[in-house]
Length: 206
Ligand SMILES: Cc1cc2nc3c(=O)[nH]c(=O)nc-3n(C[C@H](O)[C@H](O)[C@H](O)COP(=O)(O)O)c2cc1C
Image 1 (cartoon, rainbow, N blue to C red):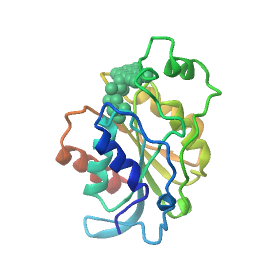
Image 2 (cartoon, rainbow, N blue to C red):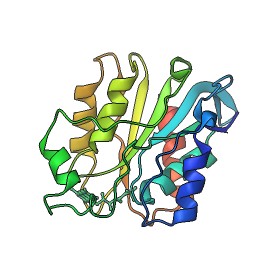
Image 3 (cartoon, rainbow, N blue to C red):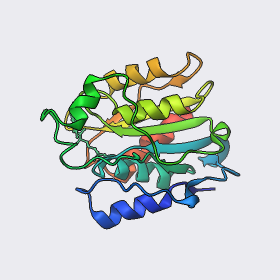
Protein backbone atom coordinates (compact mmCIF):
# COMPACT_ATOMS: atom_id res chain seq x y z
CA UNK A 1 0.00 0.00 0.00
CA UNK A 2 1.34 3.39 -0.96
CA UNK A 3 1.15 6.11 1.68
CA UNK A 4 2.44 9.62 1.99
CA UNK A 5 3.34 10.10 5.62
CA UNK A 6 3.67 13.85 5.58
CA UNK A 7 1.26 15.13 3.03
CA UNK A 8 0.78 18.75 3.97
CA UNK A 9 4.39 19.96 3.65
CA UNK A 10 4.45 18.57 0.12
CA UNK A 11 1.34 20.55 -0.68
CA UNK A 12 2.81 23.61 0.99
CA UNK A 13 5.96 23.29 -1.09
CA UNK A 14 3.99 22.92 -4.27
CA UNK A 15 2.00 26.01 -3.42
CA UNK A 16 5.10 28.05 -2.59
CA UNK A 17 7.11 27.10 -5.64
CA UNK A 18 10.64 25.76 -5.72
CA UNK A 19 12.39 28.87 -4.45
CA UNK A 20 10.50 28.91 -1.16
CA UNK A 21 11.63 27.13 1.96
CA UNK A 22 9.84 24.48 3.99
CA UNK A 23 6.97 25.19 6.33
CA UNK A 24 7.21 24.72 10.10
CA UNK A 25 3.74 23.76 11.25
CA UNK A 26 3.12 20.32 12.68
CA UNK A 27 0.14 18.36 11.48
CA UNK A 28 -1.41 15.51 13.37
CA UNK A 29 -1.63 13.69 10.04
CA UNK A 30 2.10 13.10 9.94
CA UNK A 31 1.95 10.08 12.20
CA UNK A 32 1.97 7.10 9.86
CA UNK A 33 0.12 3.96 10.66
CA UNK A 34 2.67 1.89 8.75
CA UNK A 35 0.13 -0.89 8.78
CA UNK A 36 1.03 -2.28 5.39
CA UNK A 37 4.21 -0.82 3.96
CA UNK A 38 4.99 -4.01 2.07
CA UNK A 39 6.59 -3.33 -1.26
CA UNK A 40 5.49 -5.20 -4.31
CA UNK A 41 8.25 -4.99 -6.85
CA UNK A 42 7.94 -6.91 -10.05
CA UNK A 43 4.98 -8.75 -8.58
CA UNK A 44 6.84 -10.05 -5.54
CA UNK A 45 6.29 -8.89 -1.97
CA UNK A 46 9.77 -8.77 -0.54
CA UNK A 47 10.55 -5.43 1.03
CA UNK A 48 8.81 -2.83 3.10
CA UNK A 49 10.10 0.43 1.71
CA UNK A 50 10.20 3.98 2.98
CA UNK A 51 11.32 6.91 0.83
CA UNK A 52 12.59 9.62 3.19
CA UNK A 53 14.03 12.85 1.86
CA UNK A 54 15.07 16.37 2.64
CA UNK A 55 14.87 19.00 -0.09
CA UNK A 56 15.44 22.72 0.39
CA UNK A 57 14.45 23.91 -3.09
CA UNK A 58 12.47 21.06 -4.63
CA UNK A 59 15.03 19.25 -6.77
CA UNK A 60 15.51 16.21 -4.54
CA UNK A 61 11.80 16.22 -3.77
CA UNK A 62 11.05 15.59 -7.44
CA UNK A 63 13.34 12.56 -7.51
CA UNK A 64 11.84 11.24 -4.27
CA UNK A 65 8.40 11.60 -5.81
CA UNK A 66 9.43 9.54 -8.83
CA UNK A 67 10.65 6.74 -6.57
CA UNK A 68 7.54 6.85 -4.41
CA UNK A 69 5.27 6.86 -7.47
CA UNK A 70 7.23 4.10 -9.19
CA UNK A 71 7.59 1.55 -6.42
CA UNK A 72 5.20 0.61 -3.64
CA UNK A 73 6.51 2.61 -0.73
CA UNK A 74 5.69 5.15 1.94
CA UNK A 75 6.98 8.71 1.74
CA UNK A 76 8.32 10.91 4.51
CA UNK A 77 9.54 14.43 4.00
CA UNK A 78 12.23 15.52 6.45
CA UNK A 79 11.12 19.05 7.38
CA UNK A 80 13.28 21.32 9.52
CA UNK A 81 11.61 22.84 12.58
CA UNK A 82 13.54 26.00 11.76
CA UNK A 83 13.11 26.37 7.99
CA UNK A 84 15.99 27.52 5.82
CA UNK A 85 15.50 30.95 4.30
CA UNK A 86 17.03 31.99 1.00
CA UNK A 87 19.61 33.88 3.04
CA UNK A 88 20.43 30.73 5.02
CA UNK A 89 20.91 28.80 1.77
CA UNK A 90 23.32 31.39 0.37
CA UNK A 91 26.44 29.31 0.82
CA UNK A 92 29.95 30.71 1.28
CA UNK A 93 28.36 33.87 2.66
CA UNK A 94 29.13 33.10 6.30
CA UNK A 95 25.42 32.41 6.87
CA UNK A 96 23.53 29.61 8.59
CA UNK A 97 24.44 26.77 6.21
CA UNK A 98 28.12 27.70 6.32
CA UNK A 99 28.00 27.73 10.11
CA UNK A 100 26.23 24.36 10.28
CA UNK A 101 28.73 22.90 7.88
CA UNK A 102 31.61 24.05 10.05
CA UNK A 103 30.19 22.53 13.25
CA UNK A 104 29.78 18.75 13.31
CA UNK A 105 27.87 18.90 16.60
CA UNK A 106 24.90 20.74 15.07
CA UNK A 107 21.72 18.70 14.53
CA UNK A 108 18.85 20.75 13.05
CA UNK A 109 15.57 19.57 14.56
CA UNK A 110 13.02 17.69 12.42
CA UNK A 111 9.26 18.23 12.45
CA UNK A 112 7.39 15.15 13.66
CA UNK A 113 8.55 11.58 13.68
CA UNK A 114 7.95 8.28 11.97
CA UNK A 115 6.00 5.84 14.06
CA UNK A 116 6.42 2.26 12.98
CA UNK A 117 9.91 2.79 11.63
CA UNK A 118 10.61 -0.79 12.74
CA UNK A 119 8.32 -2.08 10.00
CA UNK A 120 10.55 -0.81 7.18
CA UNK A 121 13.54 -2.79 6.05
CA UNK A 122 14.61 -0.59 3.12
CA UNK A 123 14.99 3.18 3.28
CA UNK A 124 15.62 5.23 0.16
CA UNK A 125 17.24 8.34 1.68
CA UNK A 126 17.37 11.48 -0.44
CA UNK A 127 19.06 14.84 0.10
CA UNK A 128 20.85 17.65 -1.72
CA UNK A 129 24.63 17.68 -1.52
CA UNK A 130 25.80 20.50 0.73
CA UNK A 131 29.55 21.14 0.85
CA UNK A 132 30.21 17.75 -0.69
CA UNK A 133 28.18 15.93 1.99
CA UNK A 134 24.66 15.39 3.24
CA UNK A 135 23.08 18.34 5.09
CA UNK A 136 23.26 18.18 8.89
CA UNK A 137 19.51 17.51 9.08
CA UNK A 138 20.23 14.12 7.51
CA UNK A 139 22.64 13.49 10.37
CA UNK A 140 19.73 14.28 12.76
CA UNK A 141 17.50 11.84 10.88
CA UNK A 142 20.08 9.04 10.98
CA UNK A 143 20.56 9.49 14.72
CA UNK A 144 16.81 9.59 15.42
CA UNK A 145 16.02 5.96 14.59
CA UNK A 146 17.53 2.53 14.92
CA UNK A 147 18.79 1.56 11.48
CA UNK A 148 20.28 -1.77 12.62
CA UNK A 149 19.70 -4.45 10.02
CA UNK A 150 18.00 -2.05 7.64
CA UNK A 151 19.20 -1.24 4.14
CA UNK A 152 19.76 2.43 3.33
CA UNK A 153 19.84 3.36 -0.34
CA UNK A 154 21.04 6.96 -0.62
CA UNK A 155 20.20 9.24 -3.50
CA UNK A 156 21.04 12.89 -3.96
CA UNK A 157 20.95 15.86 -6.26
CA UNK A 158 23.72 18.42 -6.57
CA UNK A 159 25.18 21.10 -8.77
CA UNK A 160 27.97 18.77 -9.81
CA UNK A 161 29.39 16.92 -6.78
CA UNK A 162 29.14 13.14 -6.58
CA UNK A 163 27.47 11.15 -3.83
CA UNK A 164 30.37 9.09 -2.47
CA UNK A 165 31.62 11.41 0.30
CA UNK A 166 28.09 11.70 1.68
CA UNK A 167 27.69 7.93 1.66
CA UNK A 168 30.85 7.48 3.74
CA UNK A 169 29.43 10.03 6.09
CA UNK A 170 26.12 8.14 6.36
CA UNK A 171 28.00 4.91 7.02
CA UNK A 172 29.80 6.53 9.95
CA UNK A 173 26.50 7.63 11.51
CA UNK A 174 24.69 4.27 11.52
CA UNK A 175 25.49 0.93 13.20
CA UNK A 176 27.83 -1.49 11.46
CA UNK A 177 24.89 -3.83 10.93
CA UNK A 178 23.23 -1.31 8.61
CA UNK A 179 23.77 -2.00 4.94
CA UNK A 180 24.45 1.29 3.16
CA UNK A 181 24.36 0.99 -0.61
CA UNK A 182 26.61 3.13 -2.81
CA UNK A 183 23.67 5.26 -3.88
CA UNK A 184 23.27 7.51 -6.85
CA UNK A 185 23.40 11.20 -7.75
CA UNK A 186 20.68 12.49 -10.04
CA UNK A 187 20.60 15.79 -11.85
CA UNK A 188 17.54 17.99 -11.63
CA UNK A 189 16.64 17.00 -15.18
CA UNK A 190 16.61 13.25 -14.54
CA UNK A 191 13.37 11.69 -15.75
CA UNK A 192 10.96 9.40 -13.93
CA UNK A 193 11.76 6.35 -16.06
CA UNK A 194 15.50 6.58 -15.33
CA UNK A 195 14.92 7.06 -11.62
CA UNK A 196 12.39 4.25 -11.25
CA UNK A 197 14.57 1.85 -13.26
CA UNK A 198 17.40 2.55 -10.86
CA UNK A 199 15.19 2.13 -7.78
CA UNK A 200 13.76 -1.16 -9.02
CA UNK A 201 17.26 -2.40 -9.77
CA UNK A 202 18.36 -1.52 -6.26
CA UNK A 203 15.50 -3.47 -4.72
CA UNK A 204 16.07 -6.44 -6.98
CA UNK A 205 19.72 -6.59 -5.93
CA UNK A 206 19.05 -6.74 -2.17
C1 LIG B 1 24.27 25.23 1.42
C2 LIG B 1 24.45 24.59 0.06
C3 LIG B 1 25.62 23.91 -0.23
C4 LIG B 1 25.78 23.31 -1.48
N1 LIG B 1 26.94 22.60 -1.74
C5 LIG B 1 27.08 21.97 -2.93
C6 LIG B 1 28.26 21.21 -3.20
O1 LIG B 1 29.16 21.06 -2.38
N2 LIG B 1 28.35 20.59 -4.42
C7 LIG B 1 27.37 20.72 -5.38
O2 LIG B 1 27.50 20.16 -6.45
N3 LIG B 1 26.22 21.42 -5.13
C8 LIG B 1 26.05 22.05 -3.92
N4 LIG B 1 24.90 22.74 -3.67
C9 LIG B 1 23.83 22.75 -4.67
C10 LIG B 1 22.74 21.71 -4.34
O3 LIG B 1 23.29 20.44 -4.02
C11 LIG B 1 21.78 21.52 -5.53
O4 LIG B 1 21.27 22.75 -5.93
C12 LIG B 1 20.66 20.54 -5.17
O5 LIG B 1 20.14 19.95 -6.34
C13 LIG B 1 19.52 21.21 -4.42
O6 LIG B 1 18.57 20.25 -4.06
P1 LIG B 1 17.17 20.61 -3.40
O7 LIG B 1 16.48 21.50 -4.42
O8 LIG B 1 16.49 19.33 -3.21
O9 LIG B 1 17.45 21.36 -2.13
C14 LIG B 1 24.74 23.38 -2.45
C15 LIG B 1 23.56 24.08 -2.14
C16 LIG B 1 23.42 24.68 -0.89
C17 LIG B 1 22.13 25.43 -0.56
